[in-house]
Length: 322
Ligand code: HPA
Ligand code: ZN
Image (cartoon, rainbow, N blue to C red):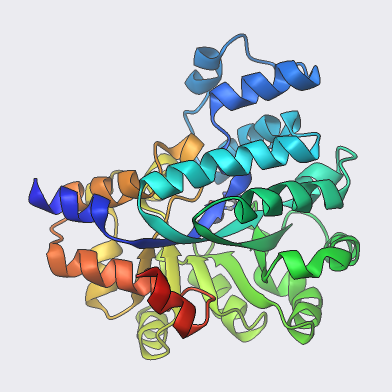
């Protein structure tokens, strides 16, 4: 249809993408061969067949296993370059990329190699790209502090701090002190909240961590006062529709609450989260959402504009990207 062409062609900003989640099965196997890493899957098809998730944790187990093939700076470069090519093809003009240093330092990979490889690929791409270092919330605050310390020598290569991994039982306030330190250091702050966790996690991400955007946040709709607050404060939610369906946050795309959020005045953006695992990149997310929900041209324009408005970029730079 005509709307499909508009969705594909419009300039977009992506604000919620985990670079480790862009690792396609073919690249996982290629890197495994290059690095002599044994995989518990016989083939690309065998691995892809394991992508049948029931919740966030069932996905995270496979996502961390996939990342085990990443050992050298060039591996991080190749992964990021492949993602940026997909983003460029989808008319993504700007992207803010999460990376999880703890996933790699736990295997003995120096944080410098992780950051250098991802950052070098960003510099070689025509797509505007910045990085957000994310702490794994199933680990301790002490471990987050240690990771921050290791990564601070390279602080000119990332602009923000995020919080991801297993949400339930790991509320934002667990990381109050390390986020306060990151704020002092001048980083932008975001956190995953209200994907599987309750609306109270969204509130503590805002009030305790003082984040500037909420990643996911879709469970806010269970608390009307919170929805009103998000709308009033024009707090951006980086919503990931295909991810939400694959991880059973909603039973099907037709049940996704994105339109209700938009109608309530919440600043919603559309993003891919872990595109290699959830069935697609930015345009796939836009198309799947618009096919399942009664959304039109004005919604498309609003969603695209929200992405740029919520981006951590100076206004002058945003204008140049449009
Ligand atoms: N939620 C939490 N942690 C994650 C996700 C997610 O959607 N993707 C990668 N790590
Ligand atoms: Zn995410």
